[in-house]
Image (cartoon, rainbow, N blue to C red; front, top):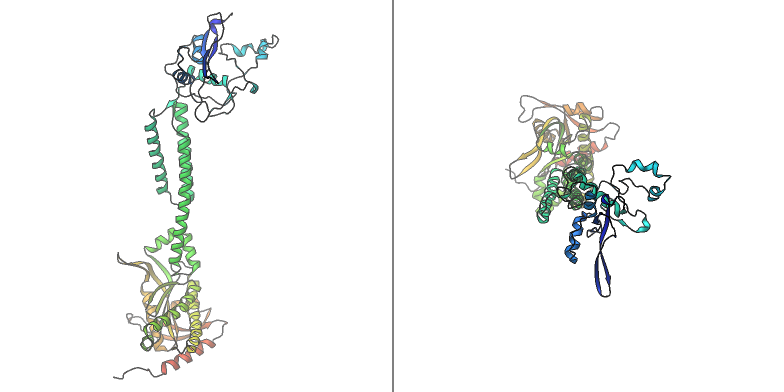
Length: 509
């Protein structure tokens, strides 16, 4: 009664149901002074949360139930009671300053207590005060985007403060269809861009998390600084699911590609070497375009295989050759050799390319593989004799030096191989084993690296085809130091006996 021109009272649209249908009433306060009256009705969204500015909810109720009053919202009535100008534009969505308790709350008991009033009176000076139920027992708690138990009176406080400060929220793109289309395009572009930009799972995960953070940050800045709303929940969910999907499919794809590459590599190198290459895929890529290495090259060839293939049928020849090559390849791979190629019954391998353990270890690996090939072939001859098949002997040449390794060939067909003088020398001294009458020869550079680990025989210097200006010193390998030399002598004896036998199925000229 004393301050009626500075008071705004609440009115409300009341909609109740009965057996006879819905009853709609406008509930207004009873007053006898020039007091402002405003509606307190709020509209909940489909998820039960209150986001709409009161004016929007009031307009919806008027349209749905035919209310014909012209009462403002409580916030609008309060501005009029405080002699404050109305806002230039109305907000579509509420601007929330924070969760429940953001605005100062004073118990009504403290206000009515005459002894306490002098202590708190200064808090109210120059302020707009909203009076309403705060206790949970009044059941006036609402769900909002930032608080699930905000008192209804505090929602009106947020609305009033937003009107006073011009905090008007609205969609950045008013047209829902255009907004949805542009949002979908943006999410798709971000997802595809990150998917193509990052191929590994961890960078992809970091990229999508960064995109989510940026989207959320931009949305917050647009709301806080530009009073504009952009979709957040659905884009963030889509980016999150897209990131998980990309990571899952990328991990599966990488795993399949790794298995495919492993199977390919293990045809040429030992499994341990293949794993080293897979652990450093960038290095492997650089190797395929060509690099120089210091490595050992091993050539092996079967003695008299043309005569053997003439004696056997085609199927028996291929079967015998595959059996022989299986044994030789196992020995080479056991000592980290790389199978370069098969040339008929010949085998070419490198030790130290594409992965090196150091000159001494690479050269020793080649010699150890040759000795293992000697042992495996001796055991194979026993099995062949039991099957009435001709015995097999081979010659092995090993050289050490510089070579170039990489993809060589045409656009239609490439081959990963080694080229260089070291390769040629290894091939020539493999052929030299026939003239010397032994099975394993190595060059001087290779011997210098392994001489402390092997027992060898000096076979002097020899001029090789294509290197007439420079003789090559060669050594025959007997065994590793500390190992028996019995197999060496047995192989030499058997080889001499085999070569001295008359050639069957030949026509003298």
